Image 1 (cartoon, helix red, strand yellow):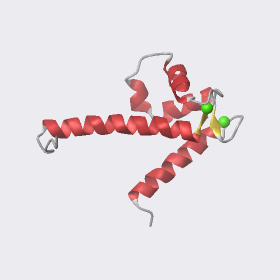
Image 2 (tube, protein in one colour):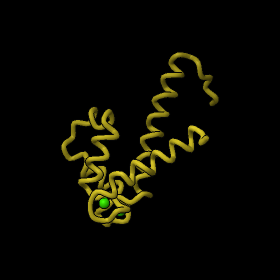
Image 3 (cartoon, helix red, strand yellow):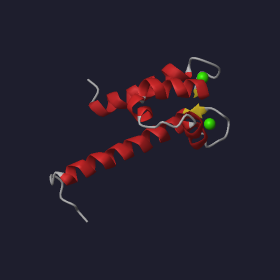
Image 4 (spheres, helix red, strand yellow):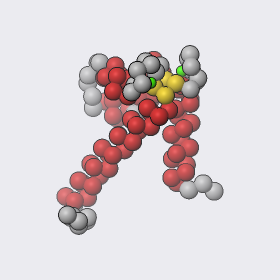
Length: 104
Ligand SMILES: [Ca+2]
Ligand SMILES: [Ca+2]
């Protein structure tokens, strides 16, 4: 039985390849594939961002090697950044409820 974290990692990998394999390079997301991934898998995240240029901006931010595709390394950066943002929000909520002692 895989652990929850192993399952989460496996899911991250499978989701990437599900979208990256649709067009062109099987191991990279082009802009269309990135858009589909964001719209299908990060629905809530996109819903609160009304910017029509958002996909272009995300693409530009993520594409650190400037090949106009998002490879797995670049995708992991996005997921990690979003996870950190979600955790900050989560900790903030816990602090407000006084369930987490501030360690500073
Ligand atoms: Ca592709
Ligand atoms: Ca790239």
